[in-house]
Length: 433
Image 1 (spheres, rainbow, N blue to C red):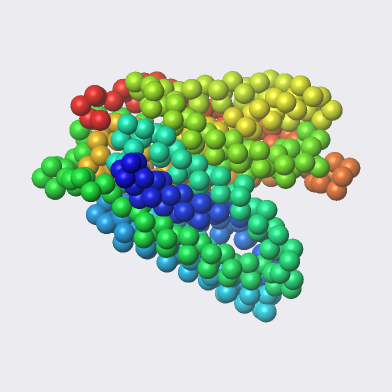
Image 2: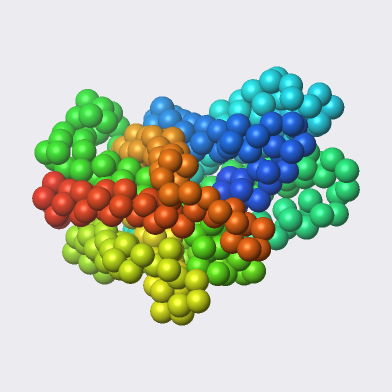
């Protein structure tokens, strides 16, 4: 009974506290326009703060993976401190920008605080509980990591209405006051998670001689094309997910559902979180976890192809079948996006063992960093340069042709990812598990 309790107290609960906190990075779209208006810059200029946050999430995970491997208490404390400082710093520079509209210092300060400093907290906070979860839930590694990573994906659904309520009730300057409040709340949550997080008492951390000569030596225990394939699958899945998710609200407006955009956004967030938990738990019952990626890519290709053939985004308004098809695509991409995240650490552990999993997982998250700079930016480029914007009659400027054209980009990448999963990523050897 004690051992069962420790699984939750020492692994699952602290993981959720950490991931529910850092997962709010995905709430950026809720307040990005308010920040832009308050500091006197365009929304496009402030959007880079989010891109930088995702980039430094991946890069800090890649470079600090060894710190997480050696000491999860140090890494989880680093996560709590940097995330809270980054959020409070963002609030300060929003306040400064409100007092000095158009000040470059305020914009750069937001980039540094929300992008770089918070990014370090995001990367170390994301990695810190993952290996611990897999050690405590050895027989259900996918379920355990899926639960925590679902917290990261589901944070948006929970935090969004809270943030909107804060913005509506804090009065003048509510945007920067909200960041101060959230910095304090999330620091407490993450600090409690830091105090609770612990590996099983019986776990023997492999010594250097047991690990080989380093991470590269571990990766080279399998054909190098195997790891490159996993990295590319992960990168493509995130890139395609961000490309479509970044245009999600406008796509929903194109098919005549402008009045329920908020509801649809919450539902897609639930699918994102559900995909993280469901796909990873399902993978626990499969001989080869890569089967999940094959399934994600096949379903994504089928739904994307269906919307391309029917031109569902362009023709969806007033056609219930096309509306359902487009929504099904959005739900599938969100679920697959989340499922891709939760299956990476367990897939890597199956292939390369548990000895250096935090470090290898960290390096693999560099794919997230580069996808954060390419996915939504490429989609924006396609929408801006193809088709044309017009008023939909409800005050919304939309470009259905542009959003439709994004699908040609994503379906090509999904096909490439499927080929990689079929021919490059081989089944894991039983002895490597």
